[in-house]
Length: 293
Image (tube, rainbow, N blue to C red):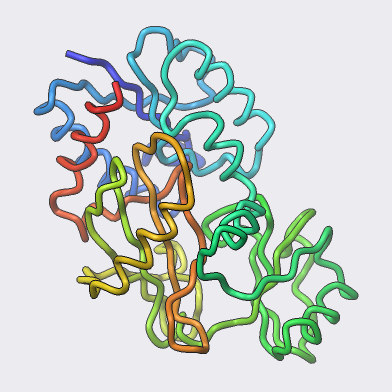
């Protein structure tokens, strides 16, 4: 029996005083992954990434799982992963984490031909930057996101002429600014899940009425999406822009103003795997993990 640590965060445990509103997503995910791994001869057990008692040398590998507090303490998280990678196999690999943790990786993917949403990069989300973004992007409705972050953390939608959000609701430092795409409210986003680069399933993420954020903590919901051949080929083409071993990958796409899907993010660090929309995802994950360890 192989032993693998599934790294999570204290905020994802339902009995924790700091539990997130979406803690139950960890429960759904590990409930799908652990039994399938056990059937494949792998004991997958959860460990908190910043627990001082966690000893990665006892494991054949460590999987970056639902570590959904890392954006609040990025330096500590990177240091922890470096230490873990020095004692066991880290999946996805440390070099992949370093590249994927900052959304500037999207520049690399654009250079390699991935279908992208027009994006303005800036050092800060101040009034002058946001005012200029309306002009540069040719849009009266924009979305501002932190370069380092996830789950709509410190992300804001801003319309021309509106007062800016409070500073605590805007990116702390470097940011990316994109035009708001109506399809996110009308159609939702698509999450294509791959394990060992093999396609597993696709979830359509739909925001609550009146919102554009698709995460469950904001009222978003998901349903199974059976992608057309051209949609799946486009998602695969994004993944082909990245080299190296990948245990998991999630390609998030949204329909642009031209009617074609474009890349929102390529999640290679700690993506939610949407187990409810992929009934076979546990087995697919276990096969990919077994092949890598």
